Amino acid sequence: MRAMLLVNPKATTTNARTRDVLIRALGAAVELTVEETRYRGHAAALAATARAKGYDVVAVLGGDGTINETVNGLLNPINGDDAPLPEDPSATRPALIVIPGGSANVFARALGLPNDPVESTGAVLEALREGRRRTVGLGQALWEGQSRYFTFCSGMGYDAEVVRAVEGLRGTGRKATPARYVNTALRHYLATDKRHPAMTLTGPGIPTAKGLFMAIVSNTSPWTYVGARPVRPTPWASFETGLDLLGLRRLGLMTLTPVIRHILTESDALPSGRHLVQLHDEAEFTLTAERPVAFQLDGDYLGEREIVTFRSTPNALQVLV
Image (tube, rainbow, N blue to C red; front, side, top):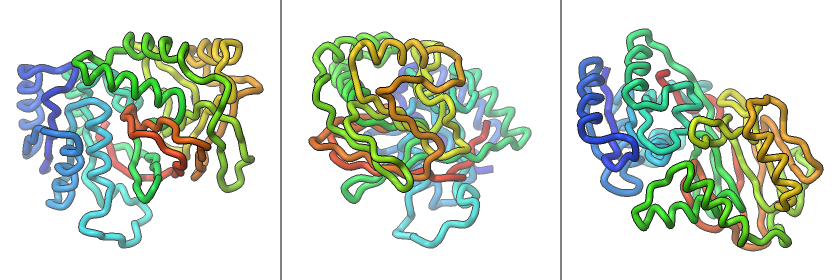
């Protein structure tokens, strides 16, 4: 089995010694080529090359951002190939191996992998030996002639504003820890506009919902983690169904406090409240904004947008877990 391992040398929770151990372990199980990512978008280019060269597996040692780039490299057409996809498009692409190396590692943990890179490598090697694969669906966001797949979440409004603020702090050399996200969210809440919602939700067979301050789009659950605690605004979301959404029409404490309390529990019940908008297992919907609003995808800030369409992509990828 030919495998390409993409290593983010700046991954938050690994060091050179750990990476060497993991590379040796994988190299003993497969015919391994190792590539380090050097710049933003490099993982996507390397994954596309692995697909074009017929590799069986692409492994990723990195955080959710590196994984997202890799997935997009595996899924996007090669050389303009727009032939119709087979019933199981995942079979035409290399399988994916995920080894968590970031701060949150939401995708890996949602797959049931350990959050420790060494333990996760052990689980992956076991899956290789036993031939265990799982086919997962992905989400896709489309805007202004562009598109990008996401593994676990996207969002517009307040949550994306928090992601933008944390990325700004990372640019000054600070790490994106769970505590930093929480503190940034609290500080940003005090300054955010709570009186003029910008977004409207529309879609095939979906009642129009106006006046949204924030929209969380989920491809699985949890949406994220605060340390070891899962955060589950859309507990019914899964890799085997369409997309879910939680939208907020109010940002006041009377609305947010019970929602936050609920999504930090292990309950499988949906959050409740008359100012919430919820969707489950939808194939497509669109968020339109009266003014540009912040937009994030798998925890990666992608600027301000006015119209984004979200689509479910079933059977997109095989993952060794």
